[in-house]
Image (cartoon, rainbow, N blue to C red; front, side, top):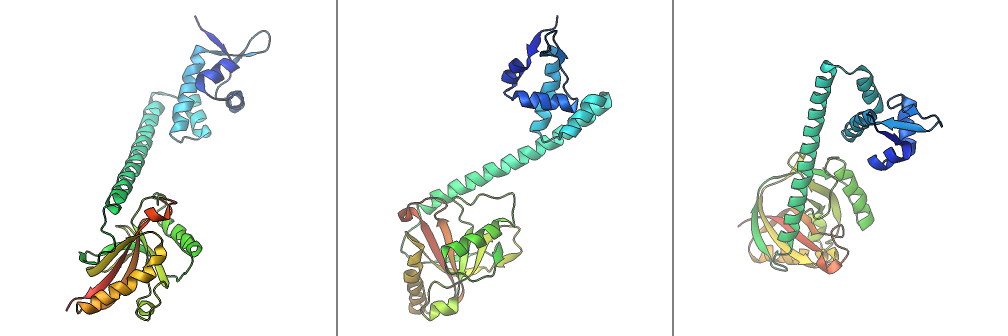
Length: 265
């Protein structure tokens, strides 16, 4: 014996609005019976149709695709639908795995950043680092934010920039040597599929916490350290953001690293 539901009961059962159910009726996908008083009534058999609509909509099927399947379903079309669903599910699994890996990387980045030695200059040997890059000079935070948004557009599936140490800027080395230590000439986003790269080699490095404006204080220290140790500053000169204002609004928690490529004696 069939059980009947009113439109409000079905809406509550599936967590959807009655307007959505009326929309399905207009499309001819889910057409309820009418009670003698004119009220819409849904049978238990209609729940199958609602389940199909819900599941396929969750996977991104259009209403036209769903209607075509429901109206023309057969063993063959059902098997074909299963294959399409499997492909879409595999794509979603891959996307979610990518997001999960991204979160793990960002979390590890922050954990590593809080352990960085601050104010101590060290020599690092860094590998070649592929990157996306926009060669455009800027001076203000607002100008940098615009460029960063353009960089993120290179990778539309990687919209997360919170806790990410893959972004930074090129400082103009010639200006820095002349004492102008905050003239930026490009922004970059490290990424294995980047069309540009930051060259490998020995780099002097120093990290600091607080306002990025301290760069103007630490760049001269890097340059002096290079001179004192017989190294030639050949560039590039990089400002790498480990923890910035996207991660925390507390300036004292922000961490920046300066890297200067040098030629060893």
